[in-house]
Amino acid sequence: MNYARCMKGYLRNNMDSLLNIPITELIAQGNKIRKDFAGSRLELCSIINAKSGLCSEDCKFCAQSSYHSTDITHYPLKRKDEITKAAQHAKEIGAEKFGIVTSGNRLSRKEIDTICLTISEIKNKIHIIVCASLGVLSKEELEILKEAGLSRYHHNLETSPRFYPQIVSTHSFQERVDTINAAKEVGLEVCSGGIIGMGENWEDRIAMVHLLDDLDVDSVPINILVPIKGTPLESIEPISCNDAIRTIAIFRIILKDKIIKIAAGREGILKDFQALGFLAGANGMLIGGYLTIKGRDIEEDYRLIKEIKRLWTE
Image (cartoon, rainbow, N blue to C red; front, side, top):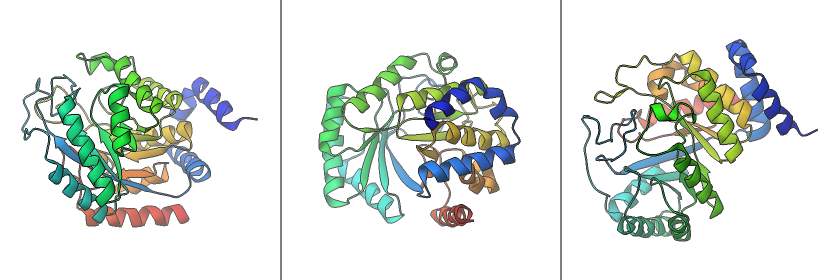
């Protein structure tokens, strides 16, 4: 019997059971599936905000949108040496993957050429796996990046197809799916996930994870909304720690062998229960900060990593 196929069919027809099962039992299921399908390797990634602000898109959650009045620093694409230096720092703090992230929905060809040169230098001199999140790219542009040494492309779905128009109006959900498929077609790994806590319901979260499963992405970051002053979501009520943990466990149960990465928001929502997110099924995390939000001190994350590994061996 095909376990994965049977499990997918069961989950599509039994959403209520996932939402009503006691959280302790759900965590245990998530932990078992993580152990059976993904093992005990914890993937650590670090990113650089390589181009900040002045984005033409209207994503309601984002501090970098030109539609919102937020207190962030705006700057053009950083120089090759600045990005390379950040990659060296990422390797020094223990990250195995380094992500180059830029604001805006599309880059110019000149910017893509600069990033290609930067990727080549990082690969040759620092020997860290390079990822990128550069908005919508054509298949040709993705091929150029892959030839330069890019290993993984990041492009979030953000939420479900149903809820997406309530969060973004300047580009379509299908555009995101098309970019993911183009990255896969040129042979890149794909990192794609979303943000929870934007006002979506449980059906939206489960619809998003099923689509990620259907797209067969390699890594799934779960961001927990950090309401930013000046954005339309600044006053939204944060989701509970319990709901965040339940989401992580459901993602693991559905995605089985994929990397599930806890990203922005873990510090503020999970607080002292961050390790519980990894017991529920997560097996990846960002270290060294986010785009416009400062992360924890690296020493604190080292202590968390030690606690995660202890829990996984018990």
